Length: 175
Image (cartoon, rainbow, N blue to C red; front, side, top):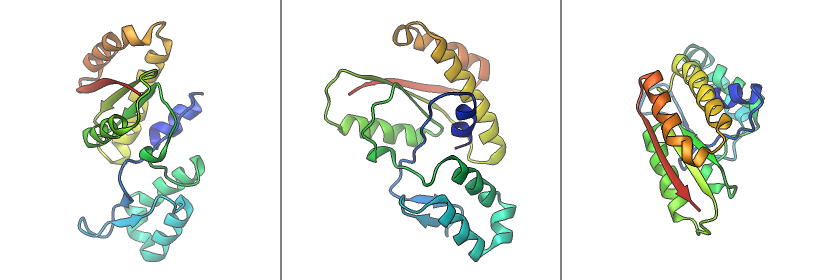
């Protein structure tokens, strides 16, 4: 959502999604996460965590994150529930990248649309999210500037991978 917010401020049309069956937020211990359905709003999550332990969720940054999220959109959305077609999808975790591939490959195919799926691993913490938002914005700006994305994407990604010194995964999916 940090990248969603940053890209939106730069004028890009952005959507953000989760890929799990539920929304999981850190809880009081690693084996006790807070779990919500996708129909629960960010505001409801925020209020729930405020009731549970405002000090803990302020200290670990979850309340700040939820506050930012509720200013961006009302609730989380699940990628698998979206029927839209996307030109570029960027994931920040290889597990999510794999889930997007699995979902697209399971959809009925018309083969008239290509989607470039790109993964840059970004650790799930505030500092990395901020750094990741800048990296993703720079990459999206480079991709958007391409006159022929389908033919130039590999070179753009290779150059960007070298620049950020992080591995990038890419696949073109037809659906």
